[in-house]
Image 1: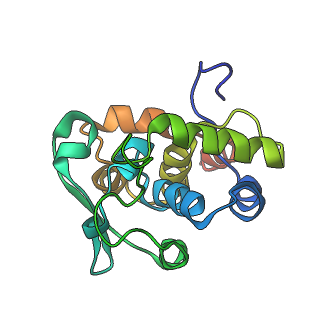
Image 2: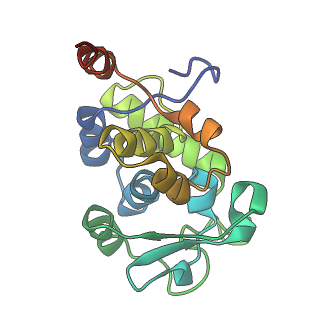
Length: 184
């Protein structure tokens, strides 16, 4: 868990996600921004760089130029949970999906997204959350569900499986189950 900006971002529980999305975030824009981070496993900077035309035909395209390392364009399917948030949000017809202040920034800044999240967490009493928590939560949920690491790597855009594995949280229950299969 992050404390004063140090440590890994917290992996959110189902209960914490429900609190944030139903009581913490106050606008469809804010819910949609963090839903994109959760349902695609992207970084907040990648979500903020999205343009309205990056969402089409049931997919979201994270352009190579806006990803960390600028290595590869990723296309992620929009699943029904995310589609609901996108439908509720009324973005501009063109340009940045999450526009910034007119005349100041073209797109919402990471600082603004961080403040929105801090305020939402304060409203519902959750500590240790950062914008990266949604990425870690998504990747951990996929791993826990038994999705092969190679598939998760394609979605997350990690160039290296070792880096991806550092994102994944292992619960005490998973460790118990793992050792319970040993024997003859």
